[in-house]
Image (cartoon, rainbow, N blue to C red; front, top):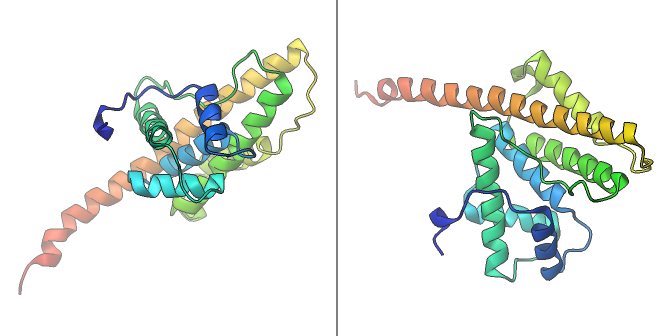
Length: 203
């Protein structure tokens, strides 16, 4: 199946979780994989399928993916995330357990997502603190605090509301970081393209 024909809908959390089980992955959450991918993309990095699959295997702590369908699902996850982040509709969503799961599990997944996002952003962003706006730095600090969220959360209506608010904050924070960092990358590429002919001119 050619990669260009893969649909760009975000795979369901449970589908990715089942794929993990089939691949012998027991510790890592689908949220962590999606957080890592989102961190790469938000920082301005782009991975080809081979590098993406290698990065995924390193996170999952496996030598390689045994199923072709697993590889396609991860590429699908990456492409869907890239499209959503770049969309003008702001329809980016995080890969988290649905509302039917216990609030403690969902809070834990959000914390893991943020932790992996920061890891992906930091490792592949190529952005120093000096290149980020004050708002971006504060946002990254906020995500670091959310990454430490406690999983010992009671099933209370107010906690449900709080968790939804935090999730929405994280979602918008990621979109803001993506916009800032990818605009910076785009501007650098344009500037490089403009000076390139001068550098190549023979004297």
